[in-house]
Image (cartoon, rainbow, N blue to C red):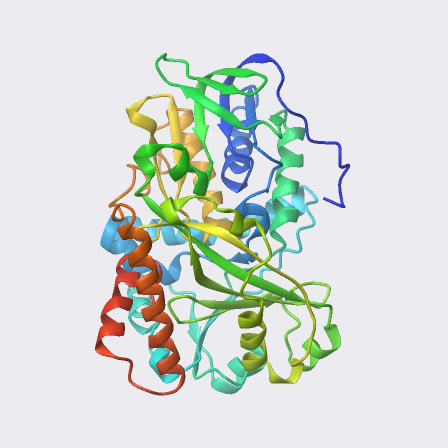
Length: 454
């Protein structure tokens, strides 16, 4: 926010009418608003945000701009091979679209399309990409290549890896600068954005739904619910559609010379192949961002207070950084934080109509890959709002959630049991030991719940 006037937040304090009212000022809501105004410039669009645009995951994620290609086999399982192929290509196109959009509109979010590197850091992870890349190759859509180890170790800056694949269609960015830039562009296109305006209720009984806030009301021809992880706690019907899990992140003080020595002077995102993945990339001012998923699970899939505080796992992140990059051991961490990620049973987002209401649409469940997928989400929701029969309204993600998690307390207890089994399993693998059969069995539930495709 230091880049902006601190007094730009404008709450709603009136009763207004609009064509489309979007609840949520993150990536999904803003891409939807921009897409609507691009297709129908005369459409009146309102965005309501409970805090400021980017307050949630859109402003606090790790900035990894990754495609859905590594999830091709899971896409095939749920949506069929042809639709899976189209979704993968759509996610790859979205990388270039976002880059083009940010350049065109002067959004300086440090987006560097320098690729993605998926690495194996122990022998158990070797071969994790083989099957999916064979499938991509058979469809003629494989952008990945296996790297020689010397090249892979040089480009990743770590000697830990045992195998590596690289695709040029990916990158990294500064997430908060992107979401604030999207808000600026949306306003310039005529979108009315009201921040510090939480929805208190949604009246669905009429053809034109009404959104009630503390000091105002919006009557709209169409309503879009783009609340992401808040959906499960706001609408009972979605309470078992997702689990909310943290991704914990740390960023170092600027160390450009030391990163140059490691050849980490690019914007590629690098991920290992464990279930609760390690991921990292550098920033333009010479910092190392390092993250790890899967530490904190929220009871009842609520956005708990811990997701908005410094991470409790700073020592774990620091230890991992030292393990990956011993030469920068002792580098000071400038900040550690975490954020809640809404993970669906399939690992993919889902879109639909709330309670079958023809004029209330929703979309969420990005499962930790929202930077690129939200661009697709904006297209899907725009097509639904405009009642268009096209490739986006017919996308495999449309049709609501595919499956549910167990009710509480079983979901939370089960999540912790699986998490702890994964920790023990992956620790054994790091030590080149055989995990227990029990831990391997419990860990398999994470894969079936869409937490990983590797």
